Amino acid sequence: ALDCVDVASALDADPKATSELAQSISNFPKSSPGYFADMKAKLKGFVEAGQLGIFAKAYWGHPAYKLPPEANLMAVAHYLEALEWQRDVARLHAIFGGKNPHPNFVVGGVPCPIDLNSDSAINSKRLSQVQDIINKMRAFVDQVYISDTLAIASFYKDWGSRGEGVGNFMTFGDFPATGMDDPSSYLIPAGVILNRDLSTIHEVDMNAGDQIKEYV
Image (cartoon, rainbow, N blue to C red; front, top):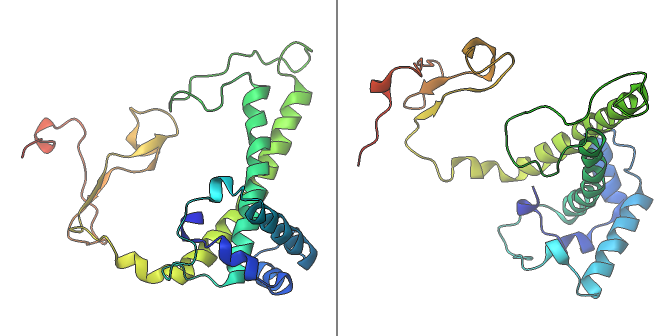
């Protein structure tokens, strides 16, 4: 969502008003005026030191940015918070002996054995740590990510009509619960939408070669 956030504008925000905004859309505990004042001071330090890092070389001040300063400060603060959150999430990979980032998109198991009573394997203590991290992950997504995304998107509703194509959409489905050979278990089912008609989902036969053609 930072693509829609004017980081420099956040320096003009009122921490108290930012706190009121944040508390109006979410119950995230870090939403006090003091919290946003500290985040504003941290951001100001980055700017004054010329060390914007990931925030450098953007189009700050461009009229296409629509968020008020308080929404910008809230988004930047939560972005910095997400960087810390990401570090905790990466601990899951370390606990299971995995790689981060993982080199492929197919789940292939973990290199560590699981034995609840062993000190040299993934035991009940480690699994408890995993559960704690997952709980923190979900809380952050529910309390910050979703509410921030909806709040930011509300200022850019007109963008929904930009870049529109011909209105035809197709997916072969993905995220199976049991296996790729069981399309009924897909979280995202296969189907085709034609001419923007959401009331009719046409079936896709992944085994029918005549339905898939490549031509110019």
